[in-house]
Image (cartoon, rainbow, N blue to C red; front, side, top):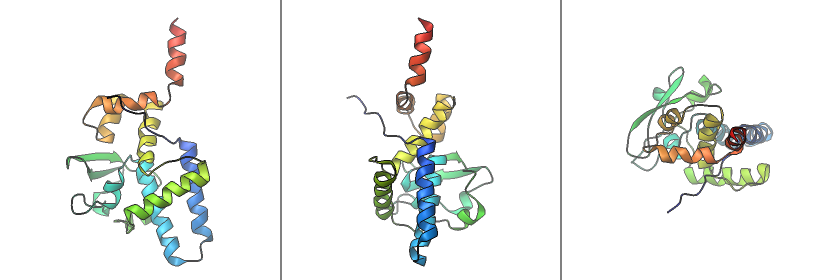
Length: 183
């Protein structure tokens, strides 16, 4: 059975989404909403710039613990994967400052965040996206920046290289141009 190509967002699209949440936070009158929006921005950074799954960020039932500040290092984050309970190291986003780290573990509900993010994607980008789309964007962005496939596989925590290989097809423009140069 053929796998479908993942939906992705680009770096500029991520920045549009991130800025939209910053604006909502800035103009919100509700302290509770402001707090949630700040947590959503942290979760978005972890999804797009560290390639983390939503379960690795906020936890999932008793099976996957939420990310805590003890797992955040100067340049990396140690996580327990939602798949197979394997430890994995991912890059710490440069924008994940000490204020953001002090908020861990994030006190947000998975479904509420997912619903918010899907609606944000519709309103800001006119796209049907999910929180997992951030992770797809992370992998695609790394591959488009020339990172070797095996490095992306390691950072994403994929057991199989062919899973990571799907991201090669998300933006085939460069591959097509290179192939045309050969002939």
